[in-house]
Image (cartoon, rainbow, N blue to C red; front, side, top):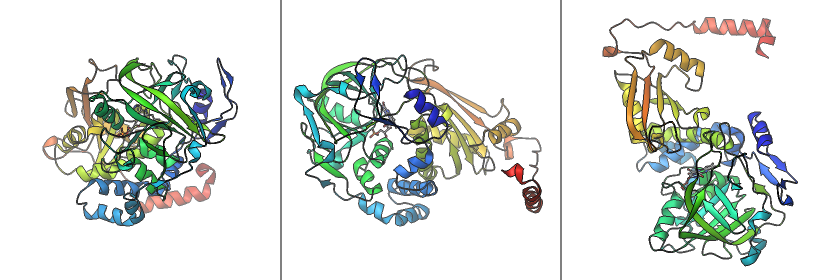
Length: 467
Ligand SMILES: Cc1cc2nc3c(=O)[nH]c(=O)nc-3n(C[C@H](O)[C@H](O)[C@H](O)COP(=O)(O)O)c2cc1C
């Protein structure tokens, strides 16, 4: 299924449903597997309830939400999405009969091996749930205080019939909630939602402002109050319309080695200890579907989602570093390890200032090990453009800035020590003022009239060239 999914995703193909998945030891499952839900930018935008053209505007709205006194450009974005703004403060709707709870297996009837959970890559440690929305709440919160909930996508390894491992990285919301319970030596209630609606899946993966609840945001995108229902065996509310919900408790102290699993870097991660969850109930719809995906060397679904999310983040980044004209994090470079930034350059040294601002002011760039700065006439998404800028505007002796012992993603085994690594900034902008003593070249450009004339002529006389 992973190989078929990958081939179809690379060809920007459709959502796939495998009707009769089979397992190595268990034979045929009666639950179909759905993959490639977010295999194209258009489908990610649709999941957010917008067209691809509206993404920049939605990004401006998110930037305005983060800014206490938004500047006029962003204030406009807030007023263009009045429904969304209002919906963020509405309360969830409590539903008595939830479709996600149509069937309930609890106690000794819990058996995760009945779900067609994929083992994606040959050296994976076992079955891995790749699209879970993990719902938690902090210690001391009320079960029905949904505003306090965190919803995050953290991969989940299946250990046996009723035990799972949740791999929330230490800075994630789920991990922070778990610490709040573990400090008091108490187990934490957890609900893992499988096959949530697209807006909930994307909201759980999106780095939203602290003050915005993922479930409320998903409801706002869906233009409905989020529909929740009390879980059957733990004190939590769960989405009423999902395909499955796995309920249980995360132990305050029990851990198990998670992995190895093939990851978004294109390599297997080493095994590491993460908390164990004991599953007390599995609820599901009638005739449910199991939603899955793989992670691997890009492209994979998370890299496509990441590209859309980076576009949404641009107005937030610009609010802090206004001279940024455009920014691209190539998905091929694991979605965050290389950044190409185009700036409106006005003074000497500005490219270096922007690089340091990206690394220092914005936490999401701490793992970006290379930044290339170009002028605003260069399209950062076009490697030919970037190569031309590097070839004509950059001197390796003068324009390269190297840093040492900065924070790094521990998954980067190329760094000399886990979590500590170098960074490189390459200034491929036009050198101005005291940056150069040489007379700089003049960029050749045809006149607009000549360009339009040539385009028209080619279109008319050689239409096959434009086909
Ligand atoms: C398919 C997919 C898998 C992911 N797997 C993990 C994971 O295993 N661990 C993790 O910490 N984050 C993972 N993420 C990223 C988080 O879901 C994302 O950063 C989210 O914003 C975290 O939410 P939080 O800030 O509320 O913790 C994954 C994202 C996607 C789309």
